[in-house]
Length: 385
Ligand SMILES: Cc1ncc(COP(=O)(O)O)c(C=O)c1O
Image (cartoon, rainbow, N blue to C red; front, side):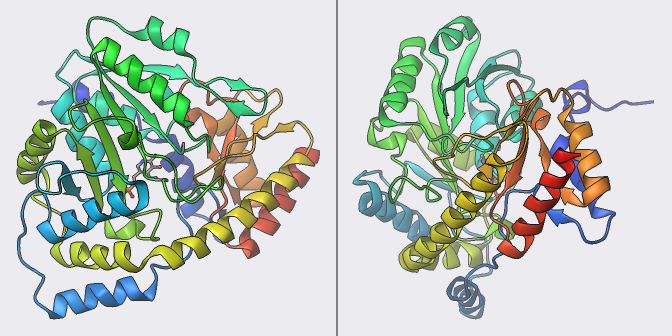
């Protein structure tokens, strides 16, 4: 009997999904395990997609995405960050952040290569590295006082002659940690010194509570640096189901990623690309409102968690997750399963996020208050038992 290739067979099932699938078979669950808000995509973006369809945007486009969207993205970087990148050669549109990770990891790693991933991290980056027959080397971010940091000694120790890539996420899912400029500078210096691709997953860039926008690594790096920024429309514009993202990177990688897109997905849907131009042009008031809601939710949940027994929760700087540590917890999956069965509150187990994740649980506070309030109450009741 032919068998499944080991490189596919050995990729672990997402433990977030595992928990979610139990929850999906139940009625009335307060779902805080996935990373999305229950806000629909704003009307002005939906209308732009309808208009685009009516205007005939339903045919194949360039593998790298429509030139007009790439220009809009270049304008966005100029306007928001004062960063100049060439839309024709340094920006590629993808069919989601996941696909941006997929195609760039595929372009930078060969079988047997190694990639360092800062963890706890959303598991997809590591899974994609494994799907490329490469090895994941996880380096945990330590909690120092009330803030996560980067263990540069551990990073140095993790480098071997096969290391090609360093992946970090800022703002982080699940930590909410956001790389400060000096941390970005140190990561860039580290990557340059060891001749590594530096991949920055910046999909939560706009969900930031310490200012308007997270400083992108592109501000410190030059177009010649081996830097890859992975981005998405999912989180900033509540467009998770639309599947649209982008990459900003060195021109040789951008060209190769666009070429490989032909064989993976060809390109993102044409009418969603058109709608995304409107999202970029007119989305700022929506984002300001979204971040205001998220900040209030974050403050509410942090306060509630800090009154619960055995919980330590650092205040996140960005994204929409809390990653509380539970004293004495050694099996976060079992904890989440029991919490779900007994209280119908669905959280993601910390173990799903790799090294440094066990002992914590992740909750997404992008849900409505009418969900968060009873969820916090039930969690407190569960912990008090
Ligand atoms: C850190 C991180 N990167 C990338 C993504 C991908 O987002 P999408 O594929 O919806 O664009 C997510 C989604 O949860 C994420 O948490």
